[in-house]
Length: 64
Image (cartoon, rainbow, N blue to C red; front, side, top):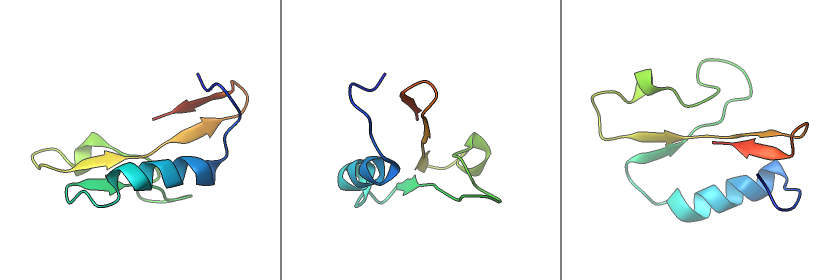
């Protein structure tokens, strides 16, 4: 649960600052379409990790 309200750009900045230069971590976000959220089927058998999130304002929480 989040302690204070957070906006999507704030979360993206935090994730990019931590993982932006990592060669095997991909940050996933597509508003609609093929890869909207991370999915195991795109990284299985590889050394890649896909990271994404969604903020649920109804609950005041964020899902990773």
